[in-house]
Image 1 (cartoon, rainbow, N blue to C red):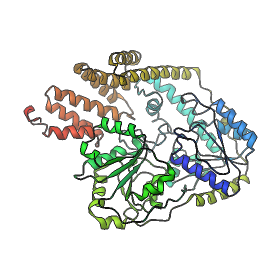
Image 2 (image 1 turned 135 degrees about the vertical axis):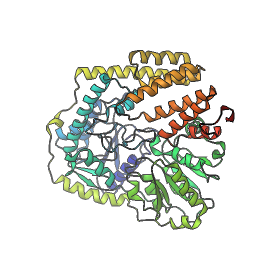
Image 3 (image 1 turned 120 degrees about the vertical axis):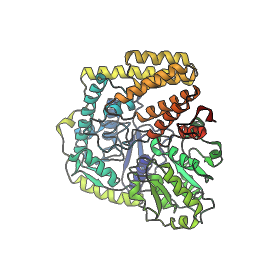
Image 4 (image 1 turned 90 degrees about the vertical axis):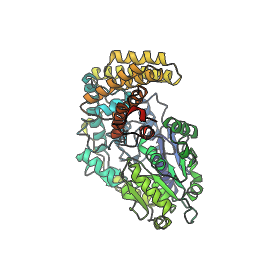
Length: 560
């Protein structure tokens, strides 16, 4: 748990309050939440874990300070049952406290944190979601990218990461096997966990999340209809896919965006250089209070959920409960929640052109949009609580199995692995300093730090990429071109290309700009086409290619 307005947090708060309303004593133990405190919950006690330093891979597994605070809370509250909704921010080590005190516990698998450091199986850059980690063997580069922002082809870094991933998977798997049961909120989650760990087959049961119903004023769709987007700025939520779809329409309809802080989102739109005409269709609302959700949904006609991965979409469920049709990607649990062309429309994840076609049809065909306003019955938090209470009762009648590896209070790493993590954290610290200097316009100092990283690790892809951008921004096109080509060469040598697509596409885009500045239109267009081959919805590449408006065989004088 990390954000007070996140789907996992909202469901957990709602379920806790519903259980308390039915007369049960509930204690909520959670880390300090970003942005806001938990909402007031009648009858629910709240205990916060101690503040933690910046998260590290090891502290994500076991944190003695958090475990001590958790044990103190357990001793004081004396619970009969522990229901874990997420371990990120707390660490899997708190399950050792449950085992030591012989307390039965269960875990809801809200996402894939248990075996995926990307949490959502989505490395980014529009690539397909991970369907098989091959027992963790495909996780090394992902792990380095998430925690150290340092993809590297050097096996001396990958080897200790591989050892840590193996230990992490074993530690968490045994902790899950020791649970009384595991709750999957969707069939998509259940199948993906079983594909990863067949040992959990007898543990996982399907219990879909519930929501607090949202009532919105019933009315005919406006013309043009008003579309809405709710979600964070992370790429997995697909905001760029939606904006690319709107930009391809001759007359984009109004879109209200409820996302991150308004100033952050506006800066992102300017950085991505979305067309000025699109700005007239956008209404950037920023964050919102959940108590205003009825009024907000009453002002919308269609809700768009263009995510690349969803284990359960709170946004889609609340929109449907308010009688609003949903246009969503066919990603994970969304395909289970939405009946195509009944209460919404499904499109292929990341396909902005297909999304644009459906948006255009909703705008031009009012009869089609009216037909989508058929709402299915929505599962409420009252329904979820009733089912969970039945599971709680059955759980309390059974004992708690203990697995040998999970008996350990902490996970100890061999010294060589700990030393390697120390080196990687040092490189990451230098990288952070360089990025801060670059954002302040101190390019020369930033270049010095990136060069320092590359002296120790010449195959550090992200440092090389950032250095090339510094050269480009400083006007050193020759040095920038050499470095971008080196980055592409490093990527081509990787045996497993995970999380590299964004850097490969962006390097190709910068090379296209450099070649065009050198009046080499043919080579420039080839690099643009290479960029779009990797990320078809790369907005800036599409815009530049359209502005050039020539074929690869055209003469340089045809550039406009």
